[in-house]
Image 1: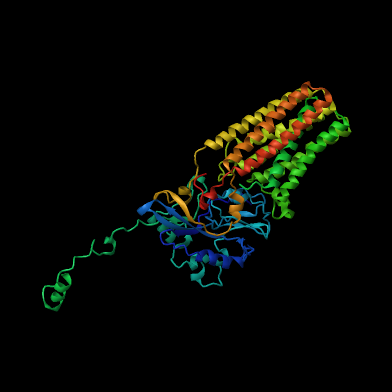
Image 2: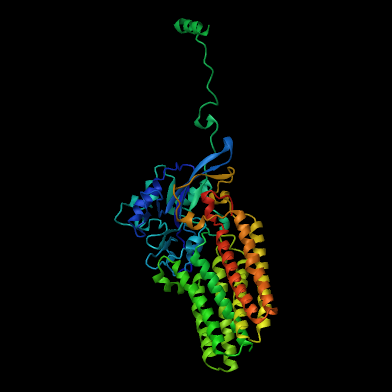
Length: 246
Length: 316
């Protein structure tokens, strides 16, 4: 059913740290690799080795510049489905193929019943849903539902592929419905925020802002500047100093 | 938004079809159109052909058209599903009305009931079509109060132009009434779309690159590097851009050529002798539908989607 279930207690999602993301695209690559063989696979590529390669990705890494001059920042910005609490992509679906899970809030597409009308992609302001030109259906991030509950994997590996692979630990996975969870505490501590809150979709995924830039050396414990070198008075070094200072 | 021909044709054709159905139902309901084989056969035939061709064209837009029947299931939440359900329901009273009106001589009571139901269903279906667009938050050119009235008035104007041609050819007594109604509807269409265009030109930004990224506290946000080198689905579907000067020209073409000139032709058909009048009525239909096609193309091409903010867009 595309009517939304009552709001779930459990809200599984991602917290993305824009301060530490280095823009390496490893999360997108590992996502593609895992999911192309996963429940929503394949993530078809059209003309992958040609001049106009295109394909389905669940996760894409944008890079933005903000501000001017010395105060400006370059921010790498990974973006995947935000698993919104009130996702219009689900309610506009005419077939019931799109749904939000009552038990953990994950938004999914049933590939067997999707008719590929693309209306859900129109309803999503975040660009989380992509059309598979080959399969004729819509595809989107599953929050690696086939990893996070997969008992064949070691417990440490039961996180989304993007989180498992991030070399900078810029991606965190957990229950954002539980205020005591690690991710919720991280959001509270770092001032995690919603993308486009004005749309009213109430995204579950949160973004952590870049930290204040450290423009002074004080933060390392060193002095504000290096002390001036003291002139060597006598001995061989003093003699050398006098010779070289001439 | 990418102006997909299948969807443009669908909304224009089915809008005109439901408009004609509405006009026929009103004329029959008020006893202004006497049951007659050719009037019924051609009138309802054209209306059903337009509606059905539109619906079939919308199937072409689907990735998996063989599953289209599933789209009737989610009417509780989805306007697209409601549109599908209403379109099917409309065939019942309208089909029965067409059958009885064309081939039999039913009582007034039956005609009135079936006409009222057909007219209601036609209006409801067009409202559902408009609501599909009206309910999309990320597309500000669609998510506003002008969209549903525009769909209604353009469907009505198209239907009246077709109805005008029909009653003119049949020499029915309602001709003058339909002609006046056509002129009023065309002027109303021009006014609604004029106001709509002024609205989308002057509406304040709803979302910005700053609100999309949350980086506004640092300063003005601009795209440094796109996530991919080639265009993806999002760019192709949502990133369509039209030059402002072309849009302005096309707006004038729709406004003048599509609605004002046809209104003139309808007025001409009032005074011209019958053969020339018929010619004017035909021209009015051709121009009116062509103008509405231009309008619908613009409706898509001018609409900016919020996802463009992640691809170098500034505000929507």
